Amino acid sequence: YILTFWYVFTYRDITFGKSSGIKNEKNNILLFFKLGIPLLISNLIGQLIFVVDQQFVSIFFDIDTYSNYAYAYTMINLITVATSAISVVIYPTLHTLDENKVKQRYSMLNSMLLLFVSACLCGYFVLAPIINTFLPKYNSSLDTFKIILPGVIISSSIQVIKYNCYKKFKMISKYLLLSLAAFIIAIIADTIVYFTFRTTNSISIVSIFVLLLWYILVEICFIKKYSCKWLKNFIFIIVILISFYVTMLISNNWLSLLIYILLYLISVIFIYKKDLIVIKNF
View 1 (tube, helix red, strand yellow):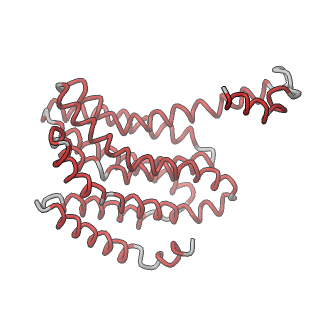
View 2: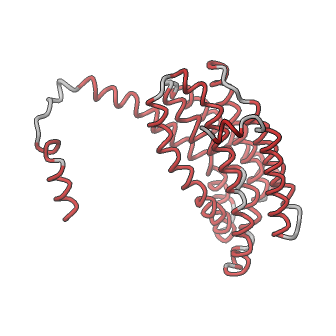
View 3: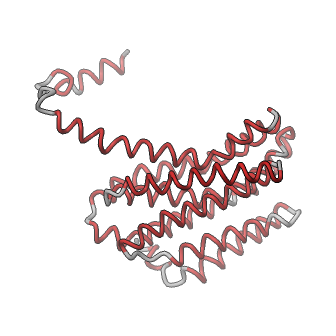
């Protein structure tokens, strides 16, 4: 109640001030709906693509299997919360820039995000022994966790950088269509994989391929129109995915961590060698 009264008093000019009639603001209200509905739907579809595999597991598997699968996504939220915070800052920043500067910085922004999220994958090697020690009932969730975790790199790039750039360039309808196509493909792919293999791991694996396809669709459409650089970032994503999955083959958790960090640093140096100074001074 105290907060309510404080807000009412502080913003009393808005709460009780002069206002235009609905007739005068009709065009603005219609514009808000016209712009807002595609934004809302595209954002919802984006969220659904990332969790469609969860829905398949909840429908076709028992409650214990689903609880372990869902717990893997709960751990992933530790990273997605950070990237969501970045997304909130990115759009106002892009909105203040002219289109040419956004085109110039598109690749660099994507690179910076990929470097950050890829480093966050080290969290797996910290969480794994904690789960094994203190939450042994959720040990099986680690099998799912290590498969779907690298997907955060792809989804973060799409939802933080590409989504905001599509909004900036008023291409949200195109983004909506591309995301809808990826969502339909995800449903079809998960259906085929379930009835073929009937395992949660197979569903997890195909979800990574769907995310990668979604990334390619959204990326191609944008770079085709604005000729932004893309190859280095795409190569980096593929290299990091392979590096992470290769380290998962090593039974020693801490040795896996060291090898992943080494592979990460080598990838950064070789792929972004000329860009590191630019990123440092960005």
